[in-house]
Each structure stands twice: as structure tokens, then as C-alpha cells.
Image 1 (cartoon, rainbow, N blue to C red):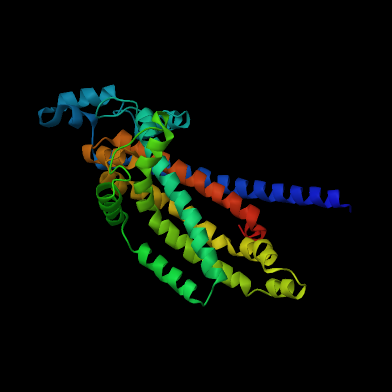
Image 2: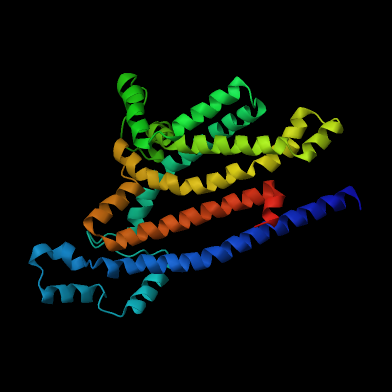
Length: 332
């Protein structure tokens, strides 16, 4: 077979492998999404809350409660309510807030832009520094560099994000006055201002990701260096750089990518505390405020959006993992 034919065959195999991983991930996502949305919707019935309690408070009477619940369609059978709500969710309509009558999709979009900006930058920091420290530790394994990096990663992994955030504010916002201590500025008002406001919360949120990615990558690379194919590559006279990028990194990166997929939910969850420290009206703060008010439709919307974001991110990680480490795709 000619070189062009071999190249085409490889591309076809890669495309088939990627399509297989995508199909399996989607096949898992559909039932998970159905169960998760059903459980999420059932929260209202389990909580015993009603929009009448928010609107009428202590002055609620049985007649007024029945009237308001009828207006919101809450007196219909549970399954009918769920199917109606689920159909709207599929079209992007997450309902109306019990608290102020606002469109939940719009409120969540506004908050998600803030939280995803912080989480996205935190993820980028985690990837860059986690991969950098992990690769350096693996290349300098058993040396003092490896020991220092491993110790530092262990140390920062146990530091809570809110403690890191407070320390960053004290140093870089109060003492040095380099960055703002709180607030949010949309990117439309200037990229520099936007980046300045999300830098400190993103750094505070990234510590756990940096440490876990670095340690998992270091372990994966060290294990890959011990494999027979590396010995064979050395015998064939391949250079260290080619061995690392062609064999070691490709086969040792799997654990780090897997951990990275698991870290995204932690970044969204950690946003609740981080946004409180930095005074940012993001996704986490909206979720916390809605739960405290008993605004069940808003809480349901938060859960649905969180499920979708986490599943989509993990699908992307699985596709990257299948592309970089073909052996892992065959075992999915």
C-alpha cells in the first residue's frame, strides 16, 4: 500500500474510533440526563415548597395557596408537570422564577458567563502549570527537582480555595494594588479589565487542579518510561525528544486527562465559595441565593445546566483521550 493509502487508512481508523467514543458517551449521557432531570424535577414535590409561600408568606390561606398553585399549574398530575417541564428544557426554556417572575434561562446565562470565565481561566492555569510541573518532575525523576515539585503539589492540594483567595486579595489587591479585589467587568468593556477581575479568583480556584494534574501526569509519564517500547526505541537509536513526544507523553497522558475531566465539576462547585470571597454575581452565587429563598425552579435550572456542562466537558475530554491515546479508546 502506498504512503498516501496508509495515511488515508489511519485517518479513517482515527475517525471511526472518535465516532465510536462519541456514540458511547452520548449513549451514556441520554439515560443519565433523563434520570437526573426526573430526580431534579421531583425536588419540588419532596421539598413541599410552593410559590405561594414566597409570594404570600405568613398570610397564606388554603384558598390563596390553591389559587396560586393553580396559576402555576402545580395542581396537575406530577407526570404531566414533568413532561411539560422536560419539553421546555429541551427547547432551552428553564421556566420562571418563583421569587421575582424573571426568566431563569436569562438569569442563568448571565451568571454562567461569569462563572465559566473564572472556571475557564482556572482550567487553563491548571493545564499549563499542571502539565509543566508534571513533565518537569517526570524528566527529572528521583532528583531534588522531582522531590521539590512533588512536595509543593502536595502542599497546595490541601489549601482551600477561599483561604487562597483571601491571601491573594491581601497581597495582590490590598498590599501591592496590582489587581482589583472584587467585582466583575464584562469583556465588552475591555479585555484587560475583564481579565484583571477574573485573575485572582481563577488562581485561587486552580490550585487543586494544578496539583492533581501534575501528580497524575508525573506518575503516568514515569510508568510509561518503564515500558518495553521505550527500551526498544532507545535500542533503535531514537533521540530523547522523539521518544518523549512520540511514545512517553502519548501513552502517559491518560491519567492526567482523566483527572482533568473530573476536575470541571469541582471548579463549578468551588465557584460558590470563590465568588462569595470576590463579590462576583456568578453561577454559584445565583444557585446559593435561589436555594436560600426556596426558589425551586431556579435551583432546578442550575442543576440541569450543571449536568449539561459537566457531561459536555467530559465528552470533549474522552474525545481528546481517544485521539491521543488510542489504546484507551479501545477499552472504553
